[in-house]
Length: 311
Image 1 (cartoon, helix red, strand yellow):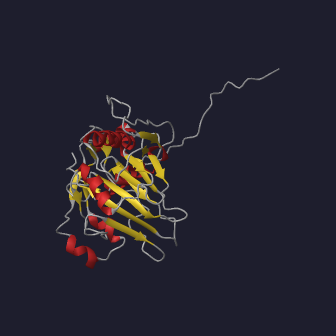
Image 2 (image 1 turned 120 degrees about the vertical axis):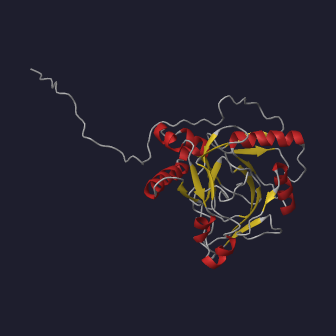
Image 3 (image 1 turned 90 degrees about the vertical axis):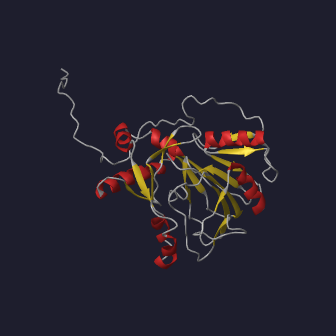
């Protein structure tokens, strides 16, 4: 005779920490709701990620960008957040001229200059300090008007490593639990240049810039000025606290929000070759320069484009 156990199944109590990350399905929406997607007519576009990152083929960045091409490249930037151009081999002047199609260029006195003050040069070799790498961040959010975007070119590439990663902060916001969205709706956070640079520079180097770069407040969730999409806008380099919260609560929430950039589904990773160019939307992304190439040398030049006040 077969005996059937009719007792109900019970499961021991187990709960993930309230500030933990969760596995399971994610919403991977590349475009804003209602966005009309159209084919590109002036170049070939090859996607490299699910929601972020695409290679543009058939555009010579060394030549002037006529208005119709600029409009289509801008649409691609809004739709893919970071664009890659293989083997461009631009001079510094050509790199600056391309970036100027999107606005005035930004200078940063805290970084080493290249041929001019609006070209930043990152020259990393054996024994150099691994500055401005191995952390997820958006550029210069400590400014009242953080950069719109940046154009980066690799002049010298190590034989192994030295990739750069970007994360889609629209996807990061989309996948926040509703209770977290409710907590940060309308919230602002303080951004300060000191935490991001104090890892490498002493007080004597940073103190003279305190008046030029006082702490600023930006929305925790910014609205993209061209697409209207909501973007998570805090980062581990420069965001110090959420306004009006007790320090412990702010630290826990900021840690949770900053960890969203670590989710692989929101990312694209680019393996550089000499002369490659990346053009990214700083309003919609964070990036991470991977410091895994010592003792080899890696040389990059970046031009940043002035942005607007986040809202």
